[in-house]
Image 1: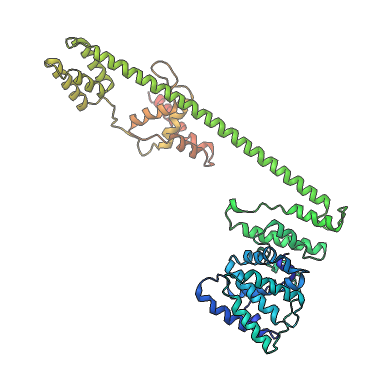
Image 2: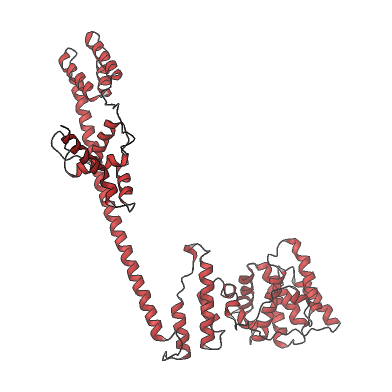
Amino acid sequence: MMKARIYTEKKDLDDFLRHPASAELNQSIYNAFLSFRPSNCIKSSALKIFNEAYYQATRVFADLHPEDNFIDGYFNNARDDLGSCHDAKLTFSIVFLLLSSTVHRNIKSATFQDAITQNLKDGNPYLDTFKKIAERYEANQIYFNNDFRPTPIDVSRPEKVNWQAITRNFNATYIAEAITLGDSEDRQHSILDAIELQFDSWKATQPEDSLPDINFLPLHFAIVQSFNPNAHSDRLWDAQKLNQAFANEKRNLEIRYQELEKSLNDTTAQLQQKEKQLDALKTLAIQTQSKNEQLQDSIKSLKCGNTETIRKLLAIAHERQTSDLYTVLQHFLSSHSGNIMETVKAEEKTAKANPVSFKSSITLSKSFSKTDCIRVFYTLHALGKFQGKDGSKVSLKSLFQVVGQAFNFDFSDFSTVLSASLADGNSAEKHTTIFVQMKQKMIDIFNSR
């Protein structure tokens, strides 16, 4: 049974300690509670223990045979509420005192006291203390007019109720039971609306993988059905609108599924492309290894007197700036002497001192921006004005590497610069200014001949 159905929790400890009918009793309980706190076994606050004890005592008077289900129905329920067996033992020791000292005690409450004694007598440091207090009140014929009649929480303003606590962090079973606290269809819908609103605020603070899976639409529909099996309701949440809401949700899920499917296909295609690139790199690595092995075999087959072959290798090394060839040749000739060995060393020294890589001495003027330069060569490339030595098509990347060397400028980001320029929303006039200037200059040159 949900606690909120029969008991409204008090918000302040003074609500117990200053209660007109039981202030003395509650003060005795509180004093005993304070004496147990130094042991550090009790984890819950005094207010929480008091509320739990009075709630369990209220259950005893509400149930027909509470003594038959003490452990599973009562003790474990308190343990789950409080999060500790020690706290639950303390709670039912207090319940023993409440039942013993009330003017409403009867055979059922006395039988439940016996169940407490029987189940908690071993390993319970609290029961003896509260039994002594009970015996003192009984010896003096002092009884208290505690009212253990069910007092459900007030749901007249559902938005003011702490539904997170009542439903134990929005447990679906407790939500379904909490709805029934409303005595009308409208009230139940209002309760569910308040729960959903608090759930939305709560879930924003929780890890996504720990959120309960709750769909509130079926719960609204269940309310409509419970008050009218034919689902003919004057409320906005009638069957037709609920069905439309379900249809909309289904359509949204289908759209989301299609988006996820497209994303999966795109990712799969990208992976396949990466696999092809990896295979190409593996093939290139194998080919390179094979060429290196062939080169090593060629070097091994050289005879020391074959100076013409060595001179050809030196020429290749000089042309390609391949320092590895010098190393191989020196290793091969290390056991020999003579002019050829000195020639290899001299050639290597010359190659290192005079690299053949091109270094430009010019760069762009301040009046010729990097972006305009990219526009000019990008357009010439698009017109097909460049090709390789063998007539093959030149890539933009290769073109701008050469342009960068020629003008001693870094054009590695040419694509990013051009894309940013085209995306800034300016008219085409800005992008064609350099070409207009070039055209006018050519006209001037022609006219001045």
